[in-house]
Image 1 (cartoon, rainbow, N blue to C red):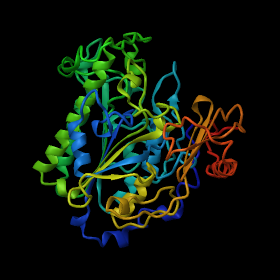
Image 2 (cartoon, helix red, strand yellow):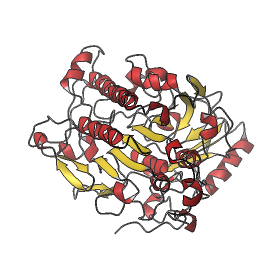
Image 3 (tube, one colour):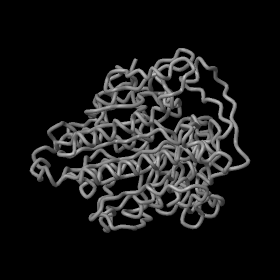
Image 4 (tube, rainbow, N blue to C red):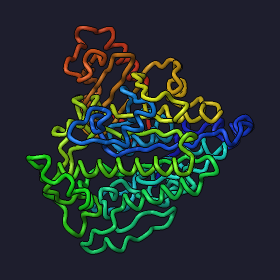
Amino acid sequence: MFMKQLSFIIPAVFSATAFSDEAMSKNFAERPNIIFILADDLGYGDLSCYGQQRFSTPNIDRLAKEGMRFTQHYSGSPVCAPSRCTLMTGLHTGHAPIRGNLNFVMPPFFLEGQIPMPRETFTVVKLLKCVGYTTGIFGKWGLGAPDSGSEPLDMGFDRFYGYNCQVMAHSYYPYFLWNDRMREMLWNNFGTQCIDYAPDFIHRNMLDFVRENKTRPFFCYYAPVQPHADMIAPEKYMEKYRGKFPPEKSYKTEGTPENFRRGPYVSQSEGHAAFAAMMNMLDDYVGELLNELEILELRENTLIFFSSDNGPHEEGGHDPEYFNSNGSLRGIKRDLYEGGIRVPLIASWPGKISAGAVSDYVSAFWDFLATAAELTGQKIPSQTDGISMLPVLFGGEPAPREFLYWEIRGGGGKMAIRKGDWKGVRYNVIENPGSPLELYNIAIDPRETSNVAAQYPEIANDLDRLMKNARTESEDPRFNYR
């Protein structure tokens, strides 16, 4: 019923004691807390520190002012589940166990959750547990249905509060949230009531986790669902933006009152105001977290990352063109052009990372595991596609990288590769495995407007060769092209 275990994911080096002796010798108190904030469907241009003009994000901007802002960082995929899988496993989508958005059971026979990772999958969470970190996830999981062996508590987390299923996370007023392995009912959301705004519950539980672990090193994976559709926010936020972004964008739901909490988006007549309100809430959450860390005197010993799982969406009433959400890059969510995968990344650690720094280092989600390993004094696993970003964070030079690679079977099958300033993109590979490779020079053409494959055939052929060798066949045939 579940996917077969992928042999390349769990070599013997990934035993729980592989790093313990060397790493445990490092002073326990010296290990920093690590917080990774992963917004949902937030585009490259959706933060004011990345150029957003229609509203501001002062608290997230504060992170950038106090730390480093990356201009060429990439998500793991243009959609949710595989992108989060690369973050957790350190493997790009040519090697990762999850390479697309696949529900555990497709509607109308709906069951909660997405298909699981193999039970023995090694994650960055398990790596941090090896050296004594307490770990928690708050928000959206999307990497294994309940009882599949791939729930958060099966993958190294000590604490989980939020949505297991990314389809159910479409609703901001769900019937329940997961509290570890138990469903916590939100009784004020039954029938047609919409009272208990789930992100607030998730945020409060995240803050409680930080408070409860203030005396020990912790890893907090904070994955709020804003600004993913539904496009909806509490009235106190909506009233701040109502009427400020004419002409408004409306959306009429195709769902019914009986099923809108299981996937279909609710109707929204004020999509522009809703998006700004949701971004305001997300920014406030970040501000409250920063204030709490200062109260607890943890800020100087906490490394914070902020990013997004993919480019901006256009669902449920969101209007990415109006807000310039992709930063004028080509494409949005589900695209392997820059707008679908280039995302903000901010890293902030007062006293360790230079304030106000800007880096054009080309990096990706699968670098996080290697970075966490080096940060905590552990050997970087040999079976990872990532490179530690720690030298870049501290003002140095990283190890050389040959290329970055992405693939996704959805939308006819898409592949992309970046080597230096050159990027190759191939679409419709299911119907036509030999579809022509598009070639772009990202340094001079970041919007990917000029396909120069005909002018530079040797470069196109080199990227084509690398692309063909970058992936291994998945043991789940649904992720393969033939």
